[in-house]
Image (cartoon, rainbow, N blue to C red):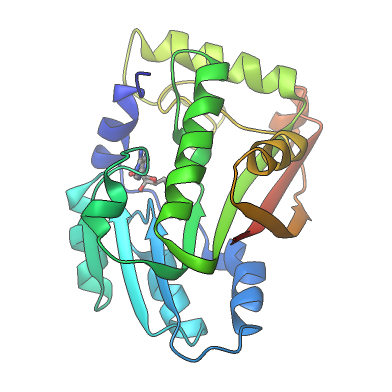
Length: 240
Ligand SMILES: C[S@@+](CC[C@H](N)C(=O)[O-])C[C@H]1O[C@@H](n2cnc3c(N)ncnc32)[C@H](O)[C@@H]1O
């Protein structure tokens, strides 16, 4: 199955950073763990702002960041003392590359960027990433998935195929009423909470222990685009 080639180029060129406030529930969950020497791997770590935030707000002792972009990994190393691995969460050889297992794995705002030719293929890529992420965990370790979630699913089909069409012509962002609302690169395949839950439940060898939704206010543009609900979703999954 082909992974969308524009996504890697998009992230390598741009350096977006997203608010670490999304991590509030994950941090609260981590602080409930009794172990003192926790280790964490951030899969799709971007520029490392999340890792830096986790270093300041948790008792985690050891960090590792994985990303496709070497440019990002350089920025991570500038921010904190952290091992970095250039690799894809979709690569079946990732556990060999990483060569150690962790107490916690974080997969934040990555699943919707794993896009194939169709929505169905994109879901299969996300499922493969979940399975791979579990492989870098110790037994009993936790995979924490953060995803922005939108409703209705039909509109997310429209967004996906519209962005596919536009990016087949140009790899530029095509802003619509402001820079961050765009119908160009990158293509995104957002899930509903029900779909996310189903996908995780179908992944063997794990169980959902927390499913936390934070409702977000809809902007006028979202309403105009027939979006009816937006949540910041955090799922904590325990590897059996
Ligand atoms: C939206 S950013 C999220 C960054 C960070 N995790 C956060 O939550 O702020 C998505 C990140 O995933 C990375 N990424 C995309 N596809 C990936 C893949 N197949 N394997 C590893 N990282 C990937 C991108 O390079 C980018 O850094």
